[in-house]
Amino acid sequence: MAIDSTIPILVVDDYKTMTRIIRNLLNQLGFQNVDDASNGQEALVRLRGKRYGLVISDWNMEPMTGLELLQQVRRDEALHQLPFIMITAESKTENVVAAKRNGVNNYIVKPFNAQTLKAKIDAVFKR
Image 1 (tube, rainbow, N blue to C red):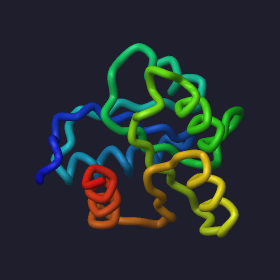
Image 2 (image 1 turned 135 degrees about the vertical axis):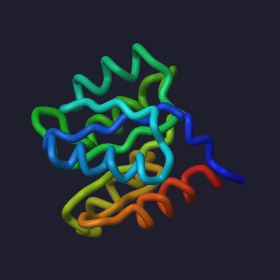
Image 3 (image 1 turned 60 degrees about the vertical axis):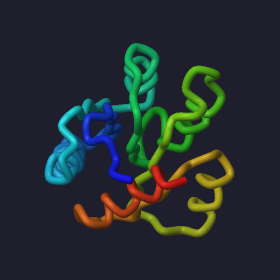
Image 4 (image 1 turned 90 degrees about the vertical axis):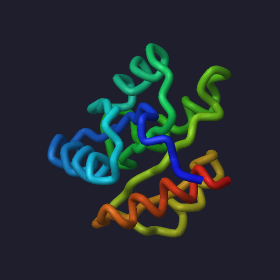
């Protein structure tokens, strides 16, 4: 089953260059409906104002980490089913375990390419 490339995706990263890279990779994969937020609080405002089909969030952000954003999303009745992919530069086992325990759908370690991103998105939507 092909993924609907029109689904709205929210990219959350406090590093503008990384946001641009992820947006470009998503565009290469055919996703054109991509918004971004520079932190967790901004992401929550966007998530409550528009229906998204996927969140792709960095782990290391201030003042709210990607993990804290994930926890907020999973606690929110309207958002708790939203597919969520975490991106991090660290492949520490405890981080992966913490993200899984909090309901992350998939996990990407930097650096990554379009094929890796596509495989992770495909895996989320095949479940």
